Length: 261
Length: 261
Image (tube, rainbow over all chains, first blue to last red; front, side):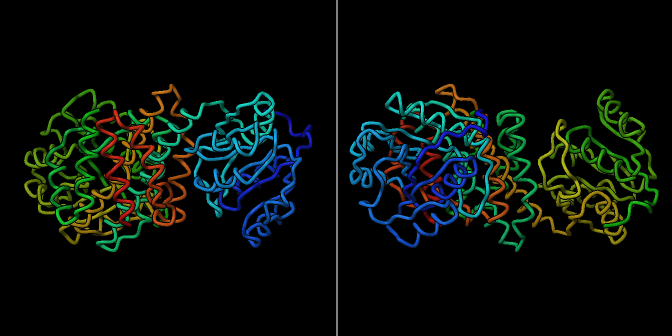
């Protein structure tokens, strides 16, 4: 971790105005880094994000400055390659923030490319502790590696060099730990609604489940009818789910998968 | 919530020596309630739990006192009915703590029966905040209702009267929110291990996922390739899971279920 007292002056251009752009932009700024420009096709979006970051809003590609030290494409996966083709930044470092897109799609934009993938779910409305977010970094150039490491370390205490292949694996595991987990919460909420119970009743359980897995490890934390081969309870549950064409097969396959462990 | 200053003196007999017996026994004691006896078939287990609870250990059914105010059967689901048949307590309140077992299995033990089901995952090694645990209560007798409500309210601020049917639904939803969720963490850990990444990398994501769902609600919190119909990423993931006979179908069925929302 670098000391906050000695921030070199880097010019950073942030492209995008979604959750990642907002959160990362704020984290960079709070750690003494300077966002020169915020680009978004949508003028209002560019202005809305540029204001809190004290950056210049830009909504035309031609207005993007050519001499910044770092260009961060924090846009949707599909937009990365499209945007990269429109940028001509010679050897300036150009990175994206996606978990699943290859680094090579940035080639049209610059000879120096990289990735800065934050392993976290980011929303506009929620503050997260960036110091603890693993920042997965990658670059094809020596100078890019030096700069990316410096900048990532300003924001987080957990920077790690990984390959594109490793990043995609991390992203896949995050889909299980975040997207699919959240969907199970959705199912639980749907079940509760049948008897008009509020989701709030499950809050302590959900939080303890997450804490327990991080503290004991998920294998040690596993409980429930499937792991103890309690067929009687499983049968009861399947009966209760008889009319649930969607949840019943999920209950079955998840239980089966637990029993295989 | 009752004031802690006026605890009436109740004699409570705790049957069982597992996670629930330990945690509930401690919670009762910390809230000024008195555990008279701890029963376990296993003498050592009875002694081990009785000591911190300042109770008398008992390992023979005949030694269980007949005149306690409340008997709590905190034993495994299958053991509840077996144990109830051995107890002859006339009209003393006898309750169990299970989410999925009916109240009627307690009938052989007493005319006054009930359930005290804590909607939480309990382990020996982890302290939980009992004040926030929803305690689902049920009783077949008027006197049982009065006593159970009094005692549950001493331990938690969230006591709720529910029927056996409702309790079973809560238990089923808890299987999704806890057991199945934890299994997804296990899968995520297994995937990380392929590249020797520590599970620790997912800790911030897992904790934020849980917090976010409790604060925004799980429907609003849902993200990922499935909800945004990002078929390209889904295809990449399925390819990565090609050799995973177990996880690939889970990925597919969970993604399908998310898209149906």
